[in-house]
Image (tube, rainbow, N blue to C red; front, side, top):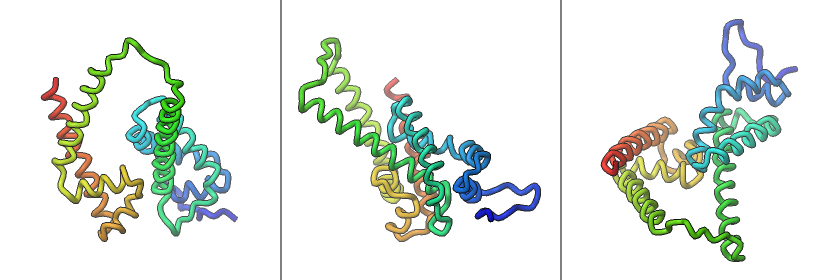
Length: 196
């Protein structure tokens, strides 16, 4: 007996229903689930990793894990997209940590190749300019928006966990995050125009 209830004709299945069908091995449901959620997963992973090649690789790993672990999805504990995006965020953060660990280990052992053509002064200056732009953009946010972004994007919390920690409704937390991202995008665009 299928876990996802049958739907009346012409009704579209929710992502939760699709993931329930994926847990039963339904490849068509997985294809539709992938089509609906891949842009959001790829966007989240890209924001964390920045590197496009690594982002594609991690996005593929996330969907492979989703296919393999779909039976563990529990509708009573949250929505399918939240489950998937939490998985994506954790995998992306793990990749950043692994990359940093590898770089640190290479530096300690002295394996890194010396690049004589590299302009460390210019690179350091560019990094400082970018850091200054992001810092100014973060200061342009309200305290509530900044706390929301820090909790979700830097603290690794889901929006639901961040809402619970802040003592607000999930809708309020989503509004804060959306407003913060819009403000950041605007301020960064303005500062980019100033630099150019």
